[in-house]
Image 1 (tube, rainbow, N blue to C red):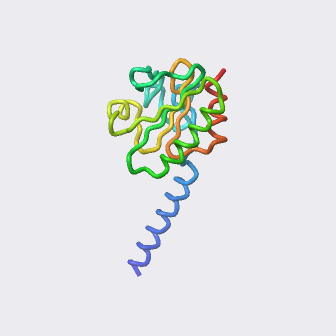
Image 2 (cartoon, one colour):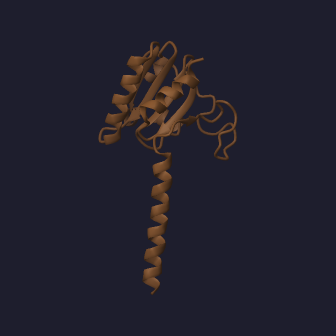
Image 3 (tube, helix red, strand yellow):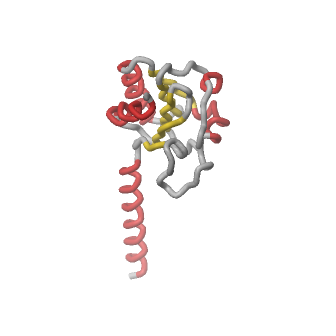
Length: 152
């Protein structure tokens, strides 16, 4: 009887975790400090608040209006989908650049920006400030909407 209850508890916990992760995966959210409250209880000063990325850190020029930065890894299947989506969006919108970084080769940046999984997408405004971010593969419509926030 005890084993059944433990198995049931583990099954419920795993189901709850899966549902929460499914709901949050790939959703672009305002970066902490980019427009006020973080929405998750953190205070300004946490994570990448006020982070600005320079071209020399990215190894590529910033877009005139916005830049889509993607952190990827070698064996990440969703990274290929994300690369395609961000490339299409960057091709559709003038002044938007797509920069893909290998997370393993940019560990200092990964730590500084609190990138915990790949793909992670950062949306930068024209000045290189992080305004939105997503963990997981974002949808094309969500990326286009995020550019509406980044481009005044």
